[in-house]
Length: 225
Image 1 (cartoon, rainbow, N blue to C red):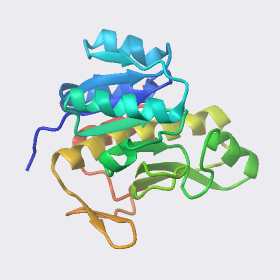
Image 2: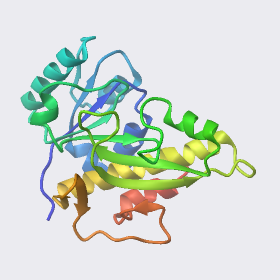
Image 3: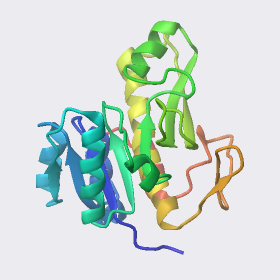
Image 4: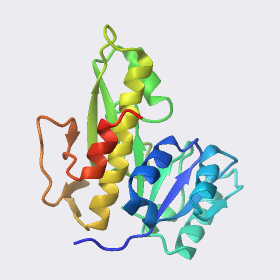
């Protein structure tokens, strides 16, 4: 059953993943009620383009930023916030918004947490990397995992930029898919900080676990533009 959820984007980046999903997923676009930044960045232009309220928090200290972010999310009645953020979020918000702050990290956690994950994976000569969508907790990319996807690193037949773009497409698909699951209230919590998506499946043909299952995420993955 679909329920109405209010989403926010917390970002300090260009917002390329957010922009692409807003274009191709009208449900996500309708549910995105707020964009929050900590600096002048590309995602503010995206907010203007889609007439989404945008609030900049000019606060250099993580604890003070977290407190102001909590106030802002509550003021706008936000249910879940997706983060594309280059700073740690700290403070009471981690309690008040437990299992409501979601990060999409460009690696197969627990491998390569923190900044520069793709570059670290490339430099390590690993054969696989990927994307991890997880809830935020007090650690650095240590929260409960909702979904992961795998990208093969084939240095002999693909360029670094091509592999990075494949990872980008997977992040777009995950953002849309997880937003669908949250709206359908299908994400449940298990013992030992685990996550279950009710009714989800695993597919050998899809590099995601749990598998993508809605048309829009599948299109976001398949489209190269």
